[in-house]
Length: 292
Image (cartoon, rainbow, N blue to C red; front, side, top):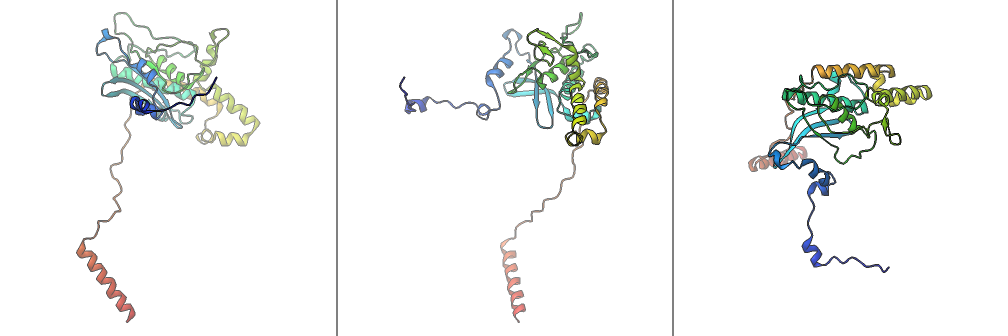
């Protein structure tokens, strides 16, 4: 088959349409975003909420967001850097921390909407997958759809940890068990014990024990913050369990203290024409005195 060179002629450039800015930057998947935002016409102006989960190198971000013509509006947000207030001082980006952050945003949004007493979620964590069901003679559960952004939805991904935390916290997030750690694709069943270990940091504790036995120097380097905080492999499950109880007791956000005094600018104001001429005159007189 002969090779034909693509000719970008005048017709090509006249019909060329520039893509959206966030598509050019590689930040937004508009194919997925459109399907997450489209609301049924018979629901009129009812907002369609999304559970937005994002990860940075040092933080886990969970937000409840809905879209308007003007842009996205955040109803509630929770961050893993808030977890030290609940007793989780280290490992703020692992699977268990993502679960705790999802639990925090769920309890926070339900408290904001006055649904926290009606929908407590699933306080007993046994690794089973359950969805929140509507109560009789009461409001329906708060519903949100998982928004993973550009992250790959592989089995065991941390985005599903945040989703599991939000679901156990009382938000109705439609999902199945297929992407949780411990799911066997061949047998098509979930090992609930494996999922429970991940929620309580069991996989981290196992790796800590193995590494400490094999190479203690590397353990002290890799888990230096754990060592400094006095957190061992045996303390992880109790730490996460107590954090879950503390989150349910008080999920409210605490405002941080902002700096009221800022350093004064070191930039000096410029000299006017008279001051510049006087400065030159002083330099000339100083030079003449030095020559005398």
